[in-house]
Length: 498
Image (cartoon, rainbow, N blue to C red; front, side, top):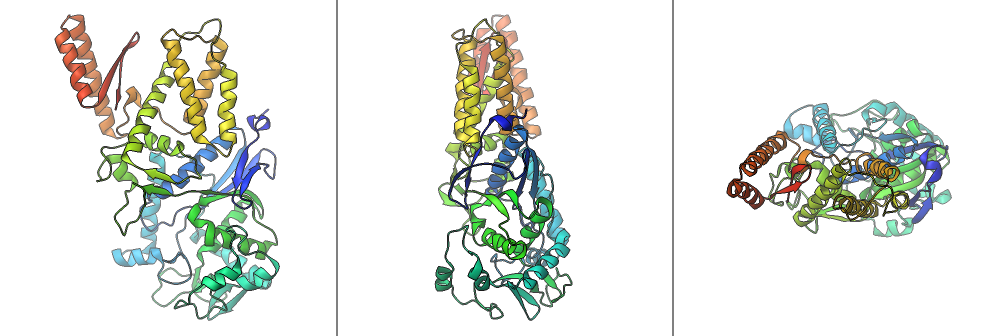
């Protein structure tokens, strides 16, 4: 029997605006699609936060025994600057500025994206399709939408007829917007004169002579609209109706709204049962923005090479920081927050490391089975990782009580505790247990620091053995002054950073 058969998951469904019991279309199988990056620049921390949240969700579903097909796309064509139908293609613009081929831009930033996610210990998706690899599917989808009467061609471009669609369907069902309000609030924009209505969106755009990325189609040499690729790829790999569609909150409208409209216009049914949206990441209480300079990229945060933070932070500390907030909450990235998360992470790792050193007794003074179910209950409640972490700290407190002789645990409960802690800390949250408690970096510098401190620990031990307590205390105190705490125990001395 798989774990999911004994656990009831509730997911907050943006479509209904409430938590719903998760019932996959096929028992034991989950189809999940998450909107991936547009690869025209380095991936930013806001994107990382979204992908990190869905990596944790992917991990938990797999842990429960579901066979998960996780599809996350790469947008490598057709994404205009204002995310609508006008402006310059972001990839083409970058290529022109750097005087390189557009696919060089795509390759460079796709590699960066993968490297960053690997650094943060992400599991790879089951399928990672690209927009350029699915032009044929997108053209065929446009043909179907035209044949069904919900799109029209003008001067080589094809537009989705939102007003015609809304006569029989509900455009705005996801974002809870009314078409009448959208009409009232729409201002005229240059470059939209071909449309019947300003609310219509492009399915295919005729390429101007200077546009580099272009493909032949029945209507013109051009490129697909941004919204179209996700509909084409999600339904190709997950079916016309699938379980979960995720992405950032900023994609709810118009991107995901348009996905629903396209699918209903082409397939005659709603594409997704559970829509999930991760909230934004702020920096020091303000929205991250390149134009204002209130931004930091992953490499800068990990290396400490920035003006916002007092030190470098390890990838697992950042994962832990992210998990301490619900994926649906706005998360404010601050130095104080990361310092607190680092201390919490070290405390949790210390507890995990103690598990192999504590000895079992005949009885337990802690209800381990009840605690274990509380961990599942937390994740079953819309993947509530902050509550899960609170339960993990409860276990950590109990582990330290055992070590100090103030609590006991039976051999059976000890095995349950070890397994459950490892399952949730490493398999579900995706944390990595850094050696000797060091959390400053995962680079070569970490290994060098660990080696240097271990050497000082050995020298201190030799000083104590020789009754040179002045030298022993000097090593301990001077390490403490630079934020490295030594911890003496019956099994030796370990260290952690503050």
